[in-house]
Every structure is written in structure tokens, then in C-alpha cells.
Amino acid sequence: MSDRRRLPSSSLTPGDLSGMTILVVDDHSNTVRLIGDVLRAAGVGEVHTASDGLKAREVLYHRQPDMIFTDSRMPFMDGMELTRSIRRAAVIPDPRVPNPEVPIVMVTSERSAGHVHRARLAGVNEFVIKPFTPAALLSRIQLVLTKPRPFIVSEVYVGPCRRRRLELNYSGPMRRGEDPVEVADSGGRAEARDTIRVELDAMRRMISARGTVDRPTLQMVHRVMQHTVFRARQVRDKAVEWAAVALVEYVDEVGLPELCDIKIIEGHFTTIANLLGTEDLDALAAA
Image (cartoon, rainbow, N blue to C red; front, side, top):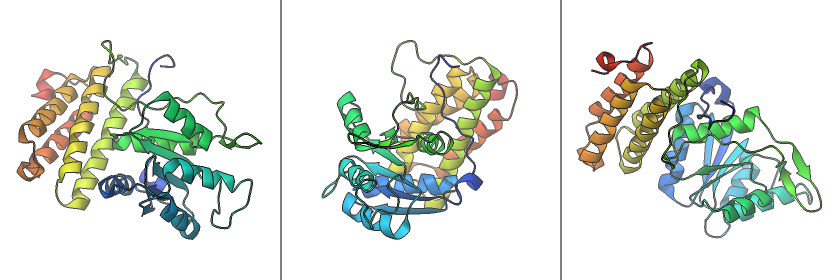
């Protein structure tokens, strides 16, 4: 599949993440909570939060996180300046920045080439585009852990080496008429199913932890099911596609979280999980 867009990897396990400490920086409380819930549901040991770059530096000093997820636009100190201030400590030691090489993932709704270029020059490791899914967040953690970039300190740039071609795992909407590209080989099919499983598990854990389905959670359920449809079509899992479409239609019809029946969502999740466990996903299995 080297010439195709790869599906998000999902081989991380809670055991891999239990020893990690991650800092989430965003001025929107709903986004902070959503990212934190996804990370905790995936098994991350400690998740700390901050509402801007200045507060993040305080957490950085006291908690020494293994990784940072930061929004790009925030008051007082935004994600760009936070990243620059951390990287500068590799040149001018700063006792408030214990590890200037800490991996930084920019979580942003900005998609322009100029914004990405500026973030890279600031020293960002990877990117997650809003709106995101659990697989999008977890795939960036895996990328940082399994394919770390050498750290560069030069007169013109301080940060992770940019020579490796960035191949981020796609988890957004279909963007072209020819999407989705089918993945027929067994490895691609297994990877797609694993991705669907990890997102279902993350959603179940999030809903269980919250005890209810609020608006951000319902929006993420909708988004995850849209991506499940996309992945199921890629690997020609018709039954999984139909089950995911049914849940998308239910969420669209209900509209409001207070009108949503959590048992119906859980029932769809269980159905999809059962379908993923069968070898021949056909119309009979879908029924």
C-alpha cells in the first residue's frame, strides 16, 4: 500500500500508554475535555491540561510531560509561541523547560500551507486537524513513539528533523470523487478493521466515563461513524458499512443529545464489533 493513503494505525495498546504523561493545551474547555477523555480511554496514564501557553509552561515545569497536544490559536500565548519557547530552551537553557525536545502535536483547524509551514519552523512534530477522531489522536502518538525524528539544533532551526516525508494517517472526510481507494490485500483489511475496533472501544470508554451523551460526544459518534463508513468501503466490508450508515442516520434524525437513546448507540457499536469478528461480511450478516 506504499502508493496509497494509509489508514490510521491502531496497534497501540493501553499497556503502551499507561506510563505516559500528556499535556493538553486549548482555551476551549470542551475540546480539552474531549481530547483528555480520548487519551484516558486509550490508556494514557496521566493527562494534564492548560488553557493557554503561559499556563502550559507552568504545567510543563511541574509535570514534565512526555508529549504535548496544543491548539494553535489561544490568548496570552498561542501554540506557535509555546512551541518556540520550548525549543529555545535547547539553545538558551530555561529551568522552566526541563525537556526542550518534548514531542509537540499541533491540534488545529487551520489547513493552509502557510500555517503548516510556520508551525513546522516553530518546531512542531506532527499535526491533528480539527474535527478529529480517536484514531487521529492515537495515530500521532504512535508516529511519535515508533518513528521519532532526530532533534536538530542549528543557527536557523531548532526542532525535530524535517527530512522524513510526513505521511500522516488520514482520518478526515472523503475529498475527491474517486475516494475511497479500495484496499484489497489482507494486511490492509486487517489494519482497517483494527482502526474501527480501536475507535469503537475509545467511544465506548468515553461514553461510559461521562455517563451520558452530550453534544461534543454525539458529534464525535457521528464523525467516527462517517469514518467507519469510509474505511469499510475501502476494504469492501459491506455489512460494517451498512451498520455504520444506520447509526449516522439515527444521529442525524435525533439531532439533539437529550433525545438520543444511549442504548441504541451501544447496540450499533456491539453490532459493528460482532461483524468485525466474522470472516465473510455479507448481506445476511448485516441483516
